[in-house]
Image (cartoon, rainbow, N blue to C red; front, side, top):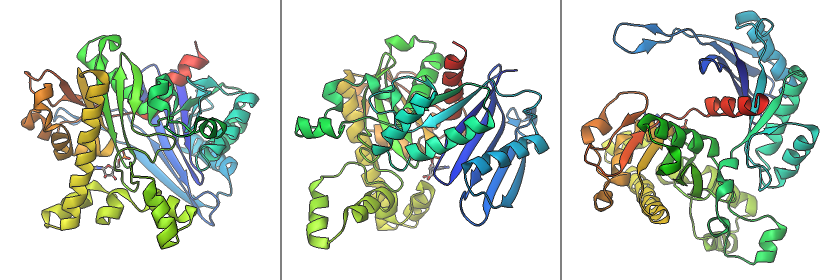
Length: 410
Ligand code: AMP
């Protein structure tokens, strides 16, 4: 057994997953949340071995335990997590993790691969908080707490931005004054890199084709959403930019918008920078258009004929099409287009509408395959389609664990 612990730390919560990298199976996972509030919540799930229920699909008899108690900070949260492992298993005393992998949102232009965490790397992650004030300090709090809990094992940082460090200057440069841009490190960085890397590699493996030969477009459509053009395994363009606000319409984020809208709202509506940040990041996207950030609610409202839900869906799909076309042009055509994450894996109509006009480019969706409730990686294009269209369930924790092991055990 080769256990690797993966930590995804936010400001008031962290998620964890223990994987056995011999089988790439999740042994346990959990969530510690409401850190710093009067009562915190810790949820620990022990994943059972799959049992074949006879219908062809395995059933997982998982056991989840929940505790409510004050959790003043991340270090206390790690103590609660260790307690859960000790009480409910699997025992970390018997099989301690060989390494701990940490999701870190922003690696700036400095980190382009998974990196062994040293005190200097911690200083660099802290310094990059200038670019990701909400995320990097929270990621660092998790690292510090985890290094206290597991002082003997290597800790590895896996950056959301790293996969996009292959973007050319033409793709990552904003057309603004270069001196201002350079002194404030204003450029496009791209995010969701761990997922885009995982999905593009899984797609190549599934098709039995060398990654280096494939032109791919990956749509990661979750609550946050981004799309990446990948040529031979290298990201050449991606829709998120300086922050995860740019690009597609998301659950609560606007995606692309004319920046002059912000000048107008500041001048005419008296909104402050913080108001605008809140508006575009937390109250826009599907939520701003239709009152819910969840596509399932939008779909239900569409069935009731609610005009704002219909418009929200059209705006969402219109943007997807624009990026599909742009990235086909950047790549000079595509071999594979994949959909992943909550919306990408579960919303056939989004997939069909996003690619529905691309018949001229050799993209042909098979509607029966697209509507199928089958799980797992699967083809949804016709056999005659020149471009293979896939649904690929993403697994960011597994990708972080793989990258962690590649550094911890080179
Ligand atoms: P994620 O960020 O990948 O967890 O995706 C979460 C989002 O996926 C939710 O906010 C929903 O919009 C969407 N989603 C999840 N399940 C479904 C489903 N069965 N049908 C449509 N959308 C879904």
